[in-house]
Image 1 (spheres, rainbow, N blue to C red):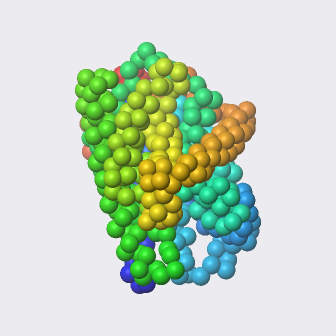
Image 2: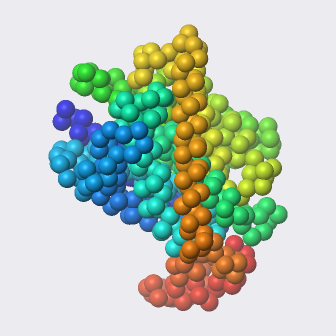
Image 3: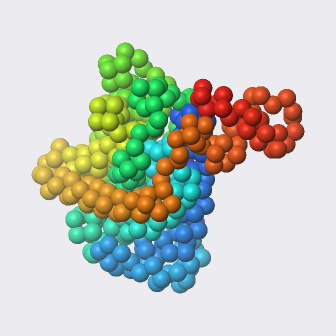
Length: 432
């Protein structure tokens, strides 16, 4: 078992890397130049707040005893009673909580107050994520999704991606559209950063999926069995999703873009996350192809339906999470982690119904409670930047900095950067 613990240390570091710096780079490159630092800061601050909160009460709420929705937050307060040997698994689950919250930030680029984000993060983690993690990952008889409903979720299709995607949609609807959207084209300012971030996300995702090992009665036998299947499925689904996205993009827009390839990577990873241990290799390819194509189509819905999802969190994470979770009921095999045959393998509709119910619970729970939290913030400290501040750029307004110091003649320290940011804010705000 020493090998398992060594592996989990690496997997945990990989998943933390998915937020900082991978997601920060992925979202930062997709943002406009006047808000890139804020976009990256939202990931870093989410990591800091959720990380400490998880150790304080999050582990207890997610894994500290039975309960359909909630576990006692004080039962394992500050990991009281948890052996230091189990700290590895605590840290692993902590990284899941961190990236789930950070994913939401991409939908609200350019216009959410930084102070509102700092308040939203701990409230959402406490009220939404930690209980949802208990429903999904703490598979007791009383836990709602994996226990009472029986839906499979290998590594977080419901608790992570659907959960974050629904929260993103709720925030977008309450915030409203960015100034000038959709008439003004708000293109990514640095696709090189986005491509780099996508590659790092892909690398880190092996920690995310492969680290979510489901142990049987014989861990020494189960460990290599699960790692091999999950690693291969994660890889093949991502390959397939890239192709699926680019084909649909080519059909719809006559171009196959680098942004499409990067988005296809994430769509495939999102969709295979809940199914990584449940399906065989052909099932993984099928899920990836479907997710890539459907998500490529879904990101365009914001223009038809009028919701301003800045960086396509809804189109990729909500839609991709639903696709992957539901298709477990179609492509799962009895040889997989859940031991259930899906429709394709003669298992009937029972598993498919369970998967759909799991999606419904995640959508309703996250949607209602996110709305309550967001409305409370909106009518107290406020959610949205003032119009003038939004035009000037949140980097300057919230952080007193500019990502690109192109006008300074000095090679000095941070004070010259701040000075340059101040003197050039008007021109940057108008052109970014």
